[in-house]
Amino acid sequence: MIEFEQLIHLIAFDRYKTLSLAAKELHISQPVLTRSMQKLEETLDITLFERTKNRISLNETGLLAVELFKRIISDTKNMKIQLKEFNRKQHTISIGTCAPAPQTYLNQKVSRFYLDKTVSSEIRDINILIDGLKDHTYTFIVTPYEIEDEDIECIMFMEEQLYFSLPYEHPLVHKKSISLKEMDGEKILLMSNIGFWNQVPKKMPNTKFLIQEDRSIFYDLIELSSLPSFTSDFTMKYDGIPPNRVVIPITDSEAHATFYCCYLKDKEAQFKGFLYTLNQ
Image (cartoon, rainbow, N blue to C red; front, side, top):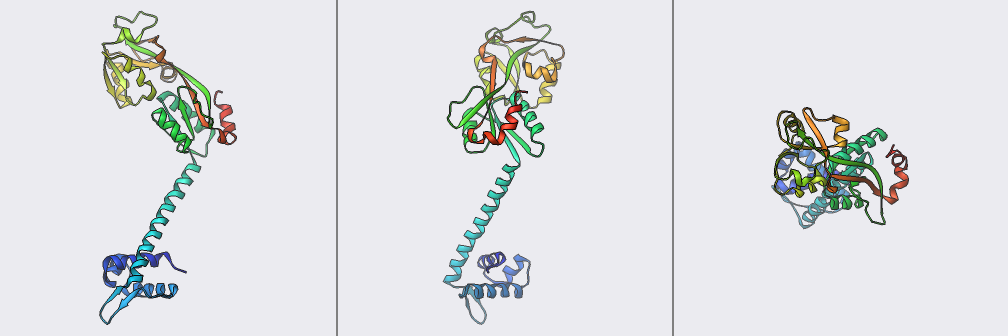
């Protein structure tokens, strides 16, 4: 039987052209490399080298063997990658979401139910999420509406309402509700990577958004500055009302979302137990 090591030895000889250089790069002795090549020829029952008194080189069969062995090594590496990825997926619940709040909520739910699995998640555009669910990149995806697809099932699992977070001195602080139009034209703090909620800033074309990528800095600015910002009922449930602020609900329909957890119908039996607890 051909040993994998012999393939590497032959390829090394082809690369470095001499037994001494190949042996040096392989960190073995030249006699060990010579015996390996001889054993390979015996196993294949063919001659791979042209041998003269002072020189050894690959013949045409040897050159073909090198190309075939390179393919085998490449296929073996790809096989290892695919097996590792398959094994990772067997132990990982992958979640693709359209917004931060449902990402946090679903991550918590999955982590508590699947104690033996790793949870990974990311925020992506909805079309990418749907494609990723179908090609098994994601175990679950979160969308702001039900997906009409015969292969996909969706369960409503949470809602989120956006609020303006205003400093006490803001002129609209005494209103019971505020529209996006009323706030358009101001400077507003905004977190990056908000996914689906990017539809809200787009409704305020005259507003200058000061976008922050670091969440801790974002919260520091909210506490220390007089700039308005956004928050939501979900955020306030976990983090409380921002200090020195008044929160006022936004009236526009774009400021409210119903989120759905979506999965492939043929996986329903596999996730039945978890799906039963989703709204509990």
